[in-house]
Image 1 (cartoon, rainbow, N blue to C red):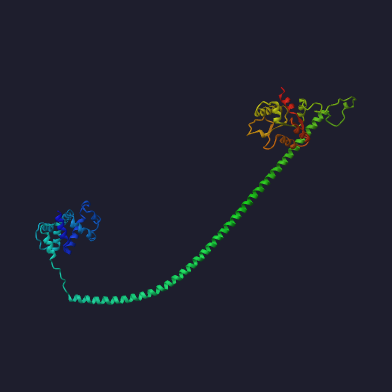
Image 2 (image 1 turned 180 degrees about the horizontal axis):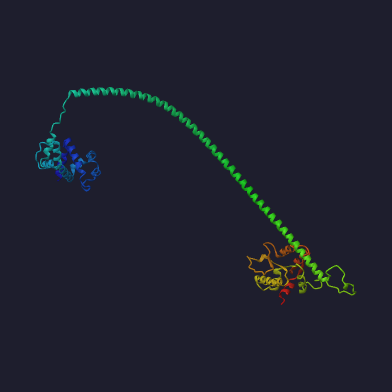
Length: 435
């Protein structure tokens, strides 16, 4: 088989050019009829091309494969014989076909490989080439056409040369204009960059000025808000002061009215200023002792007499009383017992009571439920209860009865100088713990 392949290769290299071209054309046509598995890999990409394009593009690959691949040649021969059935059968069986073209017969014989295929290829190679018939008239016409074409070509060349000259001149002009335009563009770009820098600088200045205006505006708004708050506080303070002054005046007036009534009852003054018949009878009248002057300061009776004064205000130093009365109880229990007892006292006497506790000992909010009529205050941070008591006494109008309950000597002396009456804690404890 190797000898047959070598012989085929040798024969293929000696194929006449017309026979070789026809073999490639027939093989390219048959290539499109083969399944992809039967096509050698180098030829598979050409199988989908059109027949003419396939023959043209695959010639350099198809020819060597036909020379060397016997199996592929047989597949191609089978397809070619089926397409050219009559001529193919005659060539395969060795039957002469005088009417057929020798090149066609030699190409089929090369592919089908009958016993005399080499002879048929050789016969096609020995055919003389066809000589064209000489026609003087045609030659004359062709000569005239050539001369005419040369003349036209020369004229076209001259016109083109003139156009080239014009184009060169126009090109020089355009280049000069282009250079001028480039220079203008460069100048405009420089000017644009300068103006851009100036615009950016102006924008920065505008932004800085705007930021400064915004800052000033915020300051002015804050100042306006502050002044409005001050004005509002001033108005509120003035209103509170007016209300406080009115309250103090009304309270003092009520005190004076009730004091005058009590003094009239104590002196047994007649309702009117006219002389009564009984006033004409001679006799010795009893002397009356001033209220609160004959009893000691720790006497519960004195405490009751002071509480009977009109519009009296009782101010209690809370821890000073509770730590004396219930020293072993927790502070929260002391506070609640004191305010509960004072609530009972308010229910009996209808008096105003304020209890002041020292807030320095507190660690958080105090849970305390004072009864109705008992005011409870804790001293704020940094302020002792004694100072809050002084502020309460100082806030009352002159002439109103004020009773301060505290064993602290300094508190007692200070409140006495401000017009209040000071009693010891024992007096209040005796009163509130009495059955």
